[in-house]
Image (cartoon, rainbow, N blue to C red; front, side, top):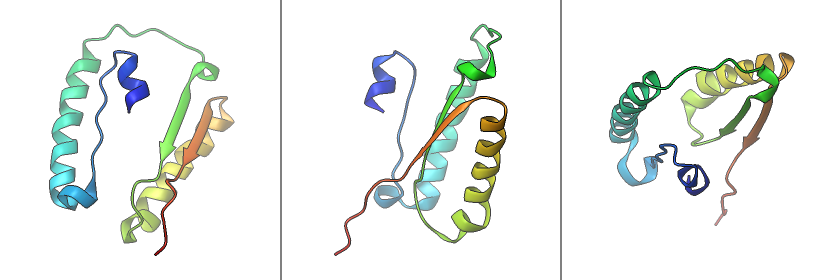
Length: 97
């Protein structure tokens, strides 16, 4: 998030561990609404898909991830890569104790 913030673009992070699933979804939904408003005011510029970089980070591992989120994101990433976009995926390391 710090790297994005340095560009002057809006960025926010959310933590299920801190607030729980429902409150996190609520907060993220309100922030998404703000970002839609911000983005709708930007001037669109055509770019080649080869200039697009999509980065995805795994957030949580729960039942819905395996059933819906992961397959959906994977499908989108496969299609973007096939069309020339650059994509990356990361998962935070977790200590096992």
